[in-house]
Length: 161
Image (cartoon, rainbow, N blue to C red; front, top):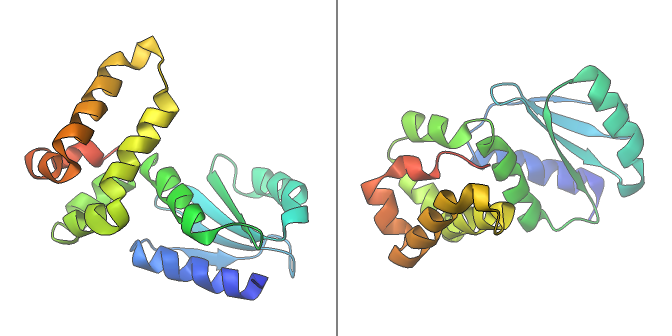
């Protein structure tokens, strides 16, 4: 897949997620950045070999932003979830829940996102004792079904560790 096509597709993903962004290029003709100021996230479309130089430049230009890199070698359907996880770490789901009350349940239901969120949390927490309550809470939510949890406590999906 070409870099131009990936850049276009990343814009479509961000549009579907309803976030506002600015498009820039910190290194002309090498990379394109989608800067999501509301959540402090930058999505960089790069050639796989340009990671180090782009990362270094991002550290100086967009200090303290969460970063997601997307290259022509990546599976865009998986990168979409990485973008969502980084947005969630910055309060995206809570913002979405308050801003688009009717659309929030649909998003959680799309592509089984509710279960994917739970699975990602469990992956992050692993079997670490300091997360015992959270682990058990998410396992129980998975057993009862994310749709039931969504109707009882939509804020359950607000955060990603």
